[in-house]
Image (cartoon, rainbow, N blue to C red; front, side):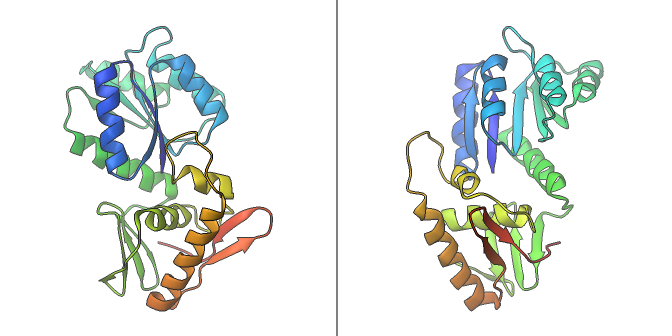
Amino acid sequence: MKILLVEDEQLLRHHLAVRLGECGYIVDAVADAEEALYHATEFHYDLAIIDLGLPGMSGLDLIRNLRERGQKLPMLILTARGSWQDKVEGLGAGADDYVVKPFQFEELEARLNVLMRRAAGFVQAAIRCGPLRLDLNRKQAFSHDQPLALTAYEYRLLEYLMHHQQQVIAKERLMEQLYNDDAEHDANVIEVLIGRLRRKLDAACGLQPIDTVRSQGYIFTEACQ
């Protein structure tokens, strides 16, 4: 999953980007609203974390601007203001949740997981498809309740495809789930990873849920719950 992090405090921005990366997220971290608007326009994100106290355009105005532009991604606000009025104002601007500074990273991570699940239409901390189960908190796949040996990249692709079940996902978007930089990467790596996933899912679960849509991308065809 790819996150846009908007935080002007350099140390906190770096710390959060590192910790989120360790949790398996791909993170683009920016320091102000103008840069955030550019990134949100040019790239696809699954969630945004936005500090309210930004220089120039405020976090509230950034959220309103993004919503006015039709951005539907979940947004979580970071705020040093603890009053209920500030929280209500943030939610009223279009945010989906908030965390008050200072906070424990584990709380932030838990709230992100909930927002991701809601956005995908799931209420439990797991996605199931027949004998296949993904534990979204532990980032672990299981087949018939036995751990399924997947690499970190294989898991990321599988989770993303299952989150977007029965949707065609372009190869370029899948590439964004793997790399957190602007360097050129061999697009054939997606084909290799998809091939590995297909073989592992077939062998362990008896499932063949990933189809290729010619010239468009890949689709997870099975219904998940």
